[in-house]
Structure formats: structure tokens, C-alpha cells
Length: 310
Image (tube, rainbow, N blue to C red; front, side, top):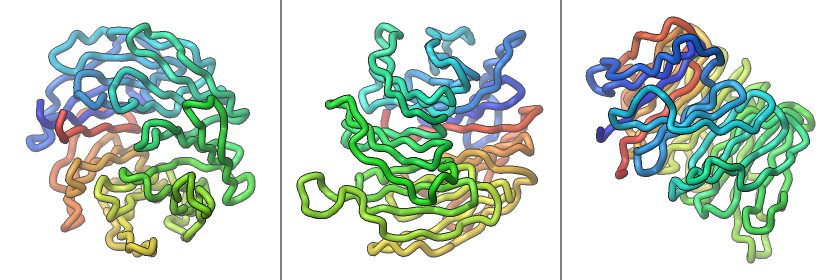
């Protein structure tokens, strides 16, 4: 299982794919169960899959495990919109429309900490230093949560009360990108806490899509930004050392909304999930689809890819 590729859908199914052949190798059918699959995350050691399904998070074993979850994390009162593993895989971070961010101890399946965001949470990411979280919400706020001090230490509101849909942190902690409901992207350079400069220094903003923006994602090598949209496209932006974003390619092929994307570890490929029921694997160099994954019978709304070292 060197490459793990997973998609989730409004058909309630979770599918594992052989990335290169396009064959579905395993389906978690969840037959008779309700609840759409909102987000997916693969643990750093490739052992576990976390699936945000309506108000709950189910943890599945990846390698030949049964289709019944190992555990169910049940404390959110509304849709779970975000799920991500802490680097060591012992903790899971979730965000929800109930206005909370929760940190779970996977060894006990208990909530370790709850942050009250005060507005529906749309996305959360873990800072590479593993000591902070960045969230964005329906009220238009981006917040930094300090894990050691248990508080919100920074707050940004780049576009008033326009909801911020998605946030992405550079793998080296150098910058933060946020995308909002109107298709605009905002970029901040992240400075050291001990420097005289502001922690988040606004460097640029640009209009990425004319329609609703669903996801922003920085590539692992921090050379590219991918933006997904309701306009059926994914745009690839190159990032210069002084944070100039230039549109490099438009990935065209999906017929409906593109909801989610995931980069390969070497930043050479991108996986996308769309309302047209399919997922696609794109080659970044050519901008072409190299594989299409067919099998879901409703919108594919989330995907996860882990092809790096386990």
C-alpha cells in the first residue's frame, strides 16, 4: 500500500483506489447507514483513515481492515467540516458547523480539548510546528489557536463578514492562504513570533474564480497553489519567492463543482473530487488528466492521498 487514494461521496460510500490502474480496490459501503461523507484524512503512518460523516468521525483501519470502524468520535452536534491528524497520529483535530474545534485523543477516543469558535467552522489545519491550529469560519474570521496556552492568539478578517471557505498552510510554515465564498484568495507571510514583524503579514490578494471557491491547497514543495471551484475548474498558481501568484494552468475536464483536492508528496500530481461523481488524477507538468476514477453514483466531495513515506 505505497499509494493510498481514498474518495468519499454523497452516496455514503468510501472508496479506495489503485492510483495508477484506476481500479477500486475496496469499498466501505456503509449500507443502511445515513450521513454523507464530508472530509477524509489519512494518518501519517498510513494506518488509519478518519472520515467525517455528518456529525461524527469514524476511524477505519486502512490495511485490509474490516468495513466496520475501529471507533466513532461522537461529540459534535452538527456537520463535521474538517478533519486532520496531528503529526504523530495520536491526535485528531476536527472542526464543525456547531462552532467548535475539538482535539481528540485517539488512544481513548475521548475529546482532549474543545475550542469555542463562536461561528460555524469551515476548515482547520495544523501548523507544521504542531503547536498551533489555523481555522476559518462562516463569519469571515481566520483564527490561530495556540495548543499550549489553550487560546485564540491571532485573528484575521480579510473581507469583513464574507465566509472563509478554506485555509492552507505552507509545509515549511512560511505562508498562509485563505479562500472565500466569492472566489478571492488572501495570502499572508508568517513571521517568527519573536521577530518585530507582525505574525501574519498580508502580502497579496487576488481573484481566483468568479464563482464560489471550495478549496485552496498549497503544494508540499510550496511552489504551487491549487484552487477548486463551483465553476468546474481547478486553477494552478505558481508562487514566486516574493509571493506573486501567477495563473499557470486551468485543469478542465470535470463537468460539475470541484469540491476537494490533494497533492502527491512530490507535488507532481493532483487528485480532485467532483459533483460529476468522479475523481481525477492530474499531471501537474502537462495539466492533463492521467486517470479518472469512476464508481460513485453521487457527488464525490472529498479525497485524500498519501504516497509519501509512512
